[in-house]
Length: 252
Image (cartoon, rainbow, N blue to C red; front, side, top):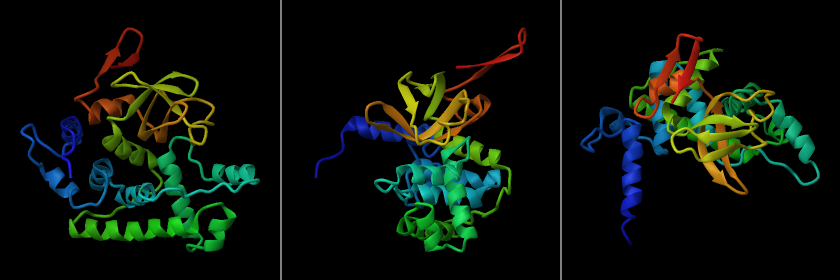
């Protein structure tokens, strides 16, 4: 088996450093040691751990579990419009991550019904897998003595927690549905299936789970965030400058 290319290793170490998992000498931090206990992408591990201090670990546990299982929704041929209409009812305008949370909460409210899944064009097997993953991650959290608490109806706290893990994947609004990566300037677009696509207005800043290349670079799983959060949570990349003459906030 060949060793991974050096560039890939350096990029991975850089990402771990930006997430706070490695210190300046390349050693694991306390956060990093906790992150390796979770069988997750480092970004999701960090989000789960940070959620405790933000008081939203119950909700973030669900979101991370939903992101760990692909293809929750389905669109049968000939019934695409009906499936899209059902999905729209779950959408939280500011966030695809919160849309996933909303789906799971409503499924739980309907006592994990398979019929409810079928009626709403949700893969029953996939969301049952989400429940299994959630139980496994919850067990690890308890072993790591991470308290599981709910933020209740304050979902802005959850958006900030999402930002704490995805600040390196931030986009700034450039045009209708078009963003540019704040760090690289690479164009990236909202996918038409995103909850944010039909908001009526586009948030100035978003973070995303990953980029998917088709005809364009589409952002997958997007959440609106505040510029101040990006500067607070990703100071190695961003800063906020306030102009007192016209009371505006500039971000760079």
